[in-house]
Length: 266
Image (cartoon, rainbow, N blue to C red; front, top):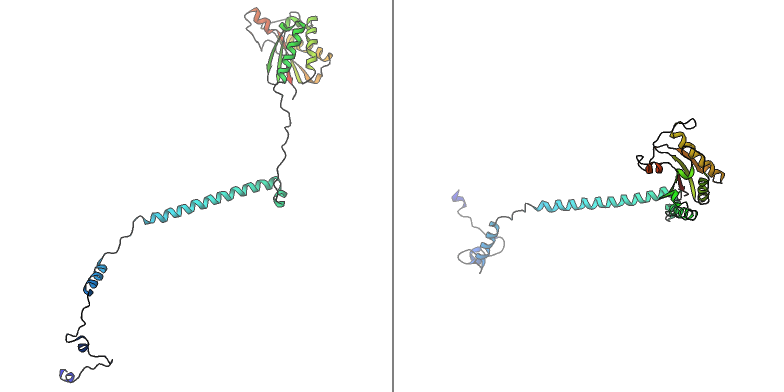
């Protein structure tokens, strides 16, 4: 085998000079200035370790995702609010939505007008002034509450003790009150009251009958003086609503009374 290849010779078929003739006797290209440094630099670059990835980089992606979710729900909520307002307008007036104008319903007036805050006080002042002119102020106690005036009439000026016939002084007192009870009054409740001392007579077996009969007598007199019967009612309460202590004569005298509860018109 070596003898066979011994006579062969390598020829240059590319038309270029042999390597030995191009680069001299050594057969190798001469080194350029700076060539070894560049090769070592490249080798050093390849030898460096690749940069490590940031372990917290996923947090940025996670926060971006949360931000998008929050924005999505805010938009969804705003859209639903707008739709609810539109639906309410459609329920009120469907034609307003179609025609492009906003329906503004007119305010509905209240079914019952509120009581004027000073109507009861005005009546109380009128009653007080009228009784002062007739000299009967000490026989009536005036209580003023919003929408109602209570007139407490002493028993002594209206009725004799244990009886239910009006005294002349009692009719004079009622006559002074009637003009002020004709207007701005919705209802008058006449209550009969007694003290806690029992009464046993053929006509009045108890304080219930006495108090109820006295209240009825006052109502009948007011009707005869022209007050509408449908605005009046009589109630007998006996000794169940005392305003003073029944242990003293003064307290029992205050408890024996006829009260007119005047409700002002609305």
